[in-house]
Figure 1 (cartoon, rainbow, N blue to C red):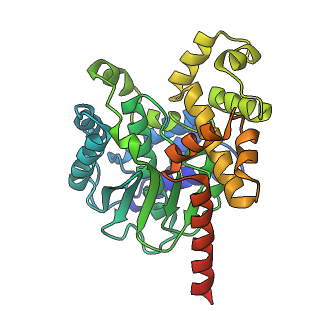
Figure 2: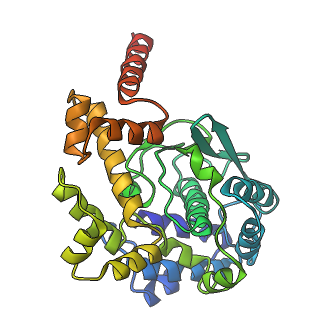
Length: 340
């Protein structure tokens, strides 16, 4: 419900009553603990835009006129790689959304997407309108990037520039399990730099279908709480250290491997991507929170030998598991010294 409240936070400034929209969708803001079905959320997304004639929900000093999302998509569509597409998005958004600035920083194997506040979005840092402004634009850019390259793109960590909101537990479903809340005016989303080299795979025909129900429809794509993705991830995790194949998982879900592949593709994911993301998340967690040996971590994650785990881990982080642990220890020591 926190996402719903944030989406509606710009309407009072335009003297528009949101109650009729909510009543029509059977959404009760007073029931803060209730869940809103994602299809209803997508419908509300488009209804609010229609009422405000602003694709940025009345949150900023300048309205983002209807049609902006389509032109953003068309501008990114013709780029050769995701890096080029995001640069086009940066330039376009600087015109239609001057209150926030988008940038991408690449260094070695790591990359960062920055969303910086150029003009104050709200009077206080933790105002729901400001919180949703950052939530919305990150979601928009991330989901659109996933769609353009035809696969889910994992965010390794995100620093949000506001205090932890009440609905922050859902960030693990929408963004990443590693969300931090910091003081400042810039959101930083970290990911593997190799993702920037992915080619843009969508064409005009795909865009025409994609724009049906947009921009609200984008909120239904590339979520970490999707049905098939979640079921596959759970099956793989519960089977560890046994490493399940796609055929194994399809059999347990009572579907053919081809059907499983299609459903995962529709949800913006793949069997290999889910398996690798799960192993990466578990590996980082165990190296951070336990003193298990590298060999034990590799075995627990279903790797046939430790060398295969080393290759995978280096691909995820750009460093060996030992170096990753040493870096963590060093950072913790520096933080302790700073506090002292």
